Length: 158
Image (cartoon, rainbow, N blue to C red; front, side):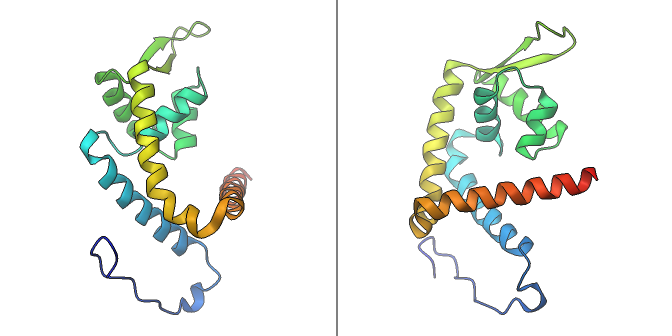
């Protein structure tokens, strides 16, 4: 049993998938998502809210299409998240000064506070990974995942 009371996953031979990254990424993503959902449940925000807040804060004026692409969320999913963030006063839509047909997003002061609160929870949820890997390997893991994502995106464009 694990600390959370779940039955530990039996270590099995991956067989023909021994050299495949997909199943391992899926396991990591699922484990992280379950921890994230559990930790952020008291705040009642949709999954992906922290990602959207962080991207908007770091990339002011970005289009919603670019945000959706970077966050790995489809456009309608992003609209739902942004609607909820706006409804709760965590983000605001403003008319673009350069293109009046387009809205830009910004994080409100309340959104900044919520983003920092949620980020602290995520940091806590990622602590076992950071502790197991150390700073150098954690940076390497992030770099390798970024390279893998870029490689897949570039192969789709070709």
